Amino acid sequence: MIIKQLSIFIENKKGHLALVTNVLRKENIDIRAISVFDTSEFGILRMVVNKPEEAVNALKEAGYTAKVSKVLAIQPEDRPGSLNEIFNILDENNIDIEYIYSFVMRKRDMPFIIFKVRDEERAIDVLKKYHIQLVAEEEIYEEN
Image 1 (cartoon, rainbow, N blue to C red):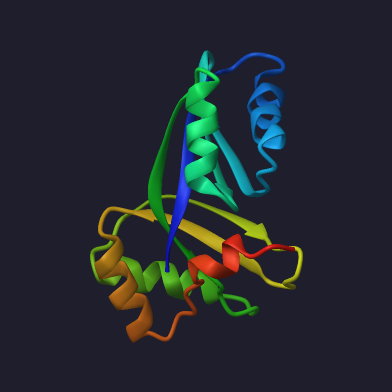
Image 2: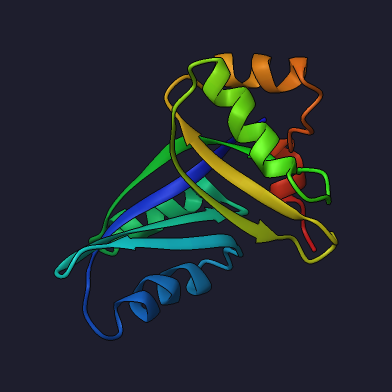
């Protein structure tokens, strides 16, 4: 239900994504999802990886500012309007979405949606109440 996500502060310069992913490759860490939120000079690289604690330690040792934060992962139904329904459910229950992104696991046909919310436990309760399929941490970290 709660997934660990890495947030890495990087300069918005040519080659910096390669430098970060080089660190992970050397540690045999698999990137499951990736997103960058940037400004003109800096960015926040957000990733879901198969070994989050090892990844954040390797990145810190390489000189990066990195932290692990909590996000939720869901698997919405494959039909028009399903995300809209989820957004409305969260809104009606006063749960703010800070950001969102999606990714597809290699062994799955459907995308997973990552949500960052302020109150993860309350969001989990609400999503379960409405039978929204939450993705377990083990599904994200499983080996391919």
